[in-house]
Length: 420
Image 1 (cartoon, rainbow, N blue to C red):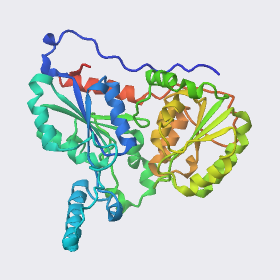
Image 2: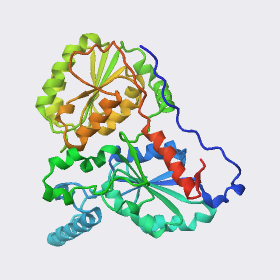
Image 3: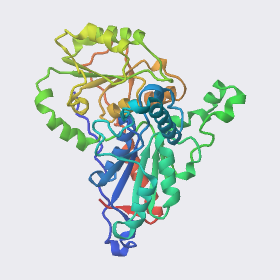
Image 4: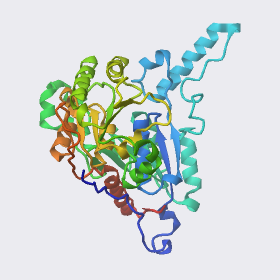
């Protein structure tokens, strides 16, 4: 198989001494990430910060929604209102218990394992920190991703616009001028295309977002941002060498996500995927299958039942360490279900063959995403007739590094720059 030359991670900008470039106040040395607790969203922010050379100089704050019970039906509410309503519900429950009161368990992040070192996003605290440290440490880069982070990120910019540069990843749907930059995939603007307009009754057009085309402070990508580049893959390959190097080749990695509103599937896709994998198994040396934590049990059960005892197939059961990065570094080819923009984007950043399972089931903007990938030649549909030993390649997707370059340009227009 031909070696793939991956794009190098962006190098820090080498310029003249700060004294000739506006002093310390113009240099960004640190970043704050506003997360929502979902790896897919937070990984995009971390990836951008890493590409800007600030990976070791960032802190994560998190906007956490209440979880469990009735809260799963309230995810449509703005996060601030959801938190207040949860507090009211807990107060009512405590009052109704009277003397038999037992403290309610924390279900919205504060008591969750692994979150002890992550601070709850507090607008006033972050604004105060940005203002008080500006003279000493320069401007603060704020990177947020996901719907629940929009109000926090926009408030920080409104209250400390002279001290911060705020980037919102994923389309905030309206009022893009609340942020210094918005980074979002092109398919988020699919509702504005003639094809999309034809699919929606005229009287509903005013309710479909976004309503305006991207302006100059919107950076468009093909896929999702992430942390994968050539340096990451090299270090990961070394870290996972002992586990993956002895495996028979070619190694096929199968990543299975979960159905979404724009890509629905169930047991039918699992049966089809199983049949296709059985067809191509003879051309594989090793097959490694990974499920998402949100993969429906009815999907995973069918696949596990068929392949659990197959000596060629390894099924990751969710135990630590997660081999996902090792898979990206060592796989010779990928099969990915069509629902996950993040998983597909990461696989397409390797330059290795990527086969997509079920793109015909996708609709609306997700269908447009798959069309763009096919036009770029970075994916092919998985049909069950492939010879995995036959490799093909393409210029790897490089969305994160390209977005980071445009962020640097936007900062330069303001007279600021990033210095790791």
